[in-house]
Image (cartoon, rainbow, N blue to C red; front, side, top):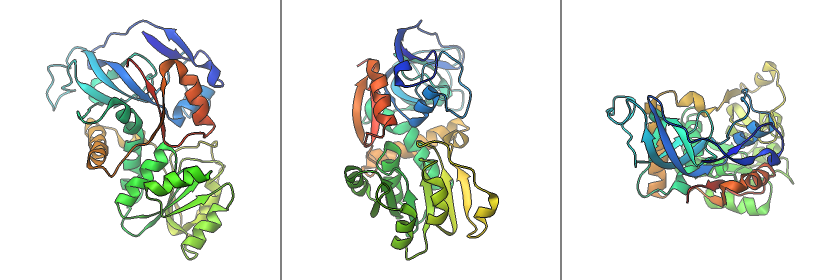
Length: 334
């Protein structure tokens, strides 16, 4: 089978397409023939060595995929809904590769991590929305109680994650303010439902957010950018407001002193999805909500480009340099 492998960390050129042995599923596992894999900034962190957890080399990146179950290990096919899993060969599935490895023809996945894929949702769409859609679900339901009328500031509002957040927040009745870097991205954020869009390359987003809210600031700020935005969030957020950090595409944010939170009674939380999918029920429940949003038509993933597996390095360069609007996807076994 073909897979993208890293033998050392570094720039996109370290991504190499190689032949590796086809693995066999063990007890409680399934072998998935991957049809599409989604790219995420976490893949870049792993590739360049800045990921928050240690990664053993060599490895295959990729945190989400969609495809068809090829084979299952012992105890899987005969299990009921209450057991490990009831997936069978031939089932269409999507999944979060919690141990990475989706940039490949095949991957071993724990059967209880597999998500049944509705027949009207394509592999490409599933790869574009599974991880980020479930993350968006957690960010709008778990970290802060989003209600109609609250003002939410979304950084990088035209990225794959940002566009999903804007749509979900709009669906819940929030007033959405987005930050972007270009006019083209501003248009994409508006089309997704952002009421106001700030070009952070030209404007001070904190000052502009306060102007748009009559000096109050945003009730909730969702930040996946990190270093270039986080400290200014403290000015942009309202009194008793909330800031969630779920990523750092510009680098890890600088440290803040706890005393800096006291003046406005600001709450800060982390938005790591892994802490909100601890059970099979949580995984499938969040995924179900995402797919239902897609089927209802109010949640629309935007795929910027689709690359063959062999061009994973080029896809990484585009994502890392913020030259995309929406999601990048790898087409595999097409």
